[in-house]
Figure 1 (tube, chains in turn brown, green):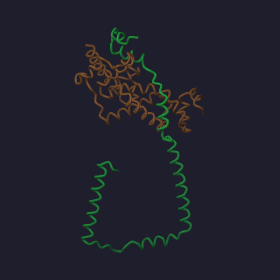
Figure 2 (cartoon, chains in turn green, yellow):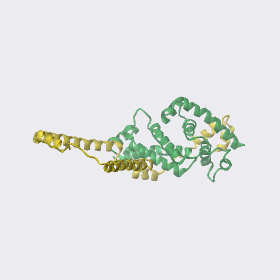
Figure 3 (cartoon, rainbow over the protein chains, first blue to last red):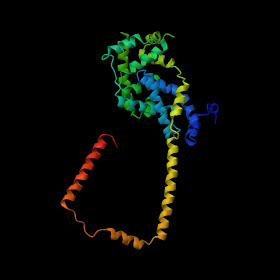
Figure 4 (cartoon, chains in turn yellow, blue):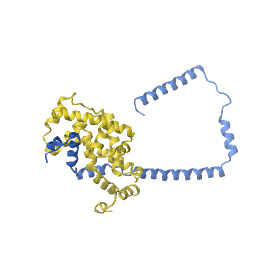
Length: 188
Length: 122
């Protein structure tokens, strides 16, 4: 099947083609549809480290391709993909012990947020959000990203991340306080 | 759009900041990302690999059954069993030196195996 024809297919059909016929073009079409959102989310989780986020996104898609047969069509493909992405991110954190930095501990970080990098205003806001999220520990960071940016419900976050509903609520309540404090501190 | 102004004027600055980011989320269209990814995909998915393994196992199983059937039909089982029994020694004599050497070899192998596991060589 040609790539142009694939763009008209539903996600379920693309998954079926990729699984039953090992059609890499069908999988490439799935990648095309989801890569932007996944890469953006991973940039938010990795303190806007573009290279690292893209590496993690690559790993996520490769793992998704290997495990595509396990994907149940009842779930949203994007949620399933994000779950893999979150696990890839967490594995990276465990391996590299990515530091969570607080604004108090790192005045340089505070200055970076205040001044912003040499980018336009739009990219500045993304990086500010990423820097703010970086003050949280990885699991809480992911929960807050899903809740505040992706606007997922508590239940959806619990399903995506495989953590209990109560834990999600706790992360949101405590995470919001930390982020609000960080935002106030940065705005002076 | 001035994002700074947007979230400063909102009653909840945190929600407003995230709303600004959400509205301004870029579309990261990058063909090279997808190309690079497709090139690094394994040639077969896990499902296809499992299918290949299953086929291989079926062939192995059929071969084993045919082999056992032929052995059952053509081999004299009584003489086979008696020849095996004949291989078992009536008594075993272990000298103290042989016993100590055997213990030493087993102990050394255990230490090497432990070290390899700890060192993640296995």
